[in-house]
Image (cartoon, rainbow, N blue to C red; front, side):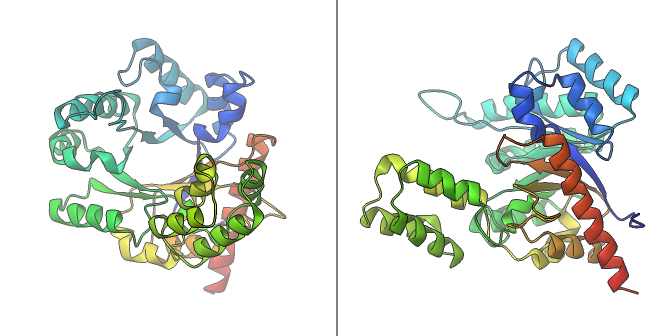
Amino acid sequence: MSTATEFRVGVTLHSFTAEYLASKWSFEDMMELCSYLGGGVEIVGPAHQRGFPRLTHEFERQFKSSVERYGLTPTSYGSYADPFTLVDRDFTLDELADYTMPQLESAVNLGFPVVRLQYFAAPIVERLMPFVEAHGLKIGYELHAPLTLESARTQQLLEQITRIDSPLLGVIPDMGIFARSVPQFRIAAARARGVPEPILQRALRLWEDDVILETALPELLGMGLEPDKVLALEVMWGSFGRSDPKGLLEIMPHIVHMHGKYFSIVDGDEPDIRYREAVAALLTGGYEGWISSEYEGPGDVSSFESVQAHQTMIRRHMDDYHRSRH
């Protein structure tokens, strides 16, 4: 039994996407499952909220009723910027602000203390701060591949966070940026799409050598990669980052939430993500928020059992960390 109390482990409903889209589990079912998975619940606005980006009375009643019935704790609300929604042009900054503000209002009314932002919202974040400060709402940019800890975009976000200097503005690192390898199901998918083996192996080597996509892609195209198969390889850079988990210590004061991204649990561990090191860094840095288990692997497993295994792994790493300190 874990004695660690520094951070808590919950789940995002995104983990249950396969069952939800297949109508195997209803929204109410997913909320009930959260009560067996740490009790912390994170939702994705456009996927789970009726009336998104605005909040309907019906959804508010449904959500709050489930929270009360199952003893849940709202942890993080997944907002979206969606600046590319229009066919002929991107959102103006005014339109982006008008699209984002109802999502912040939804989060407050639903009882979420944290809102996940995408980096597209950076140009309007200062417009959001008065509302954020009035409600004590924390907002955080998700650091999701290709936004690694070292990427130029992440550094720009951190510079803005430092300049604004508010404890309510921070980051939400996604564990997918701490990958040690590309998951086998992604490699198999690339083969199934017809990517030639020499090109696939070269792509994997370039990824392992931390070559950025903008540099790797021309080489792969030069090897004969067909344009319609580019996406099968781009996902390597778009989902799996190569950051060192120790880097969490450098941004610890800015972390408002964590996404526990994972793709599989094999023999009790995530084979492709450096979880042990990441958990140690969070504990060393005194992180006291939530981690949401976020399954994004194949849809042919039980999401519930998979999340259970993921959370068991995290708690084991927490226990191991504390034993090593005594």
